[in-house]
Length: 396
Image (cartoon, rainbow, N blue to C red; front, side, top):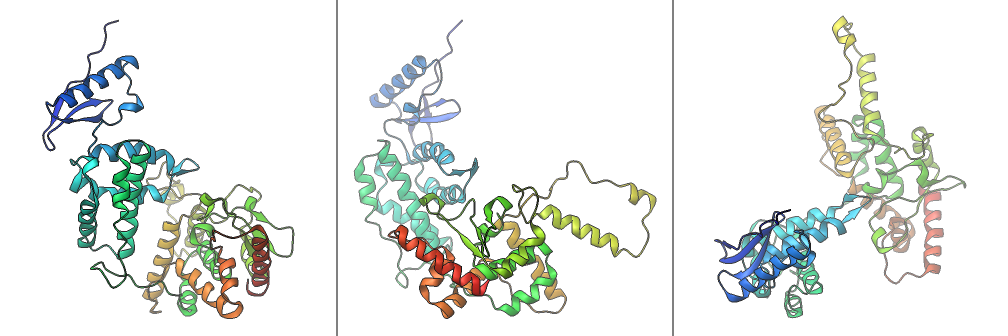
């Protein structure tokens, strides 16, 4: 069989770099026409020939990669690393948002030339885009994480990462970045005014958060298999939670009130999620049908649900759909003359923390909320669980 032609040695006009395109990806080689770039090109061609025309990992970027090439190489790693149960995590989205201004401002710069002053330019661009101080600090830390990974892969010298560490995070009151309002508890009156205007499933999740202080991402994931119902107090162990990646366990005690809310949603299928948007939609349709005043026409009666709807209802809520359902309920309440200010489900957790701290102290609030502590011993964890049980017995 005839051998395939090697990729062409080309010039990248924007940066003046030499490059080849391998498997649809750009491999940068150094300044166009330089002996080093031609030597790197020869290595790429030889590597391709040795690997049967496939792109080996060793030539993902050239010997002197640009920032854009570095981002591209890192993204291949990040897409596999930031996954949980086969799905990308929110960290991948956060990384994408952090790396976008870096690529736009310094994409054609050699990665080895990217230093503290360059990082400060990227940070100022984020401030000028009206990002809050906390968001800016998190995104800058993600850029540092990119460079740290590149050092571990021997794509840039260690001095690059050490130099960037000198760029400290923005401090409160000492920078031009916007400050955000602290998250405050949501008044019970606002919640009570919203409950009649959301579905039964969303109402149950709201009430569970009020009683247990669960995170929104924990309450939407509840399944029968995650519940231990053998004792007077039930225990819920979320399949996923914020500190799972640290190897920490999370147990939420459920008291009598929480159990009463959950019982109507328990299912024979232990794998099924307790709170389903599809079931909420079916209940709404049944209510509309029951409240219908005019009889159905024959054509309406014959209508069947679409086999492939453009936006099919999912088998469970996620944090975004749960938040949107609450927002929709608030709008309906306001149309009915209730005058409910906007609030989000995470504020329910703050309400619970405030109440528990007031009644039982700071330690009870920490253990009931499942906050991570790096120096917690196994004995202390058992003591915490007992205290959380006591709180659930009296509060939930």
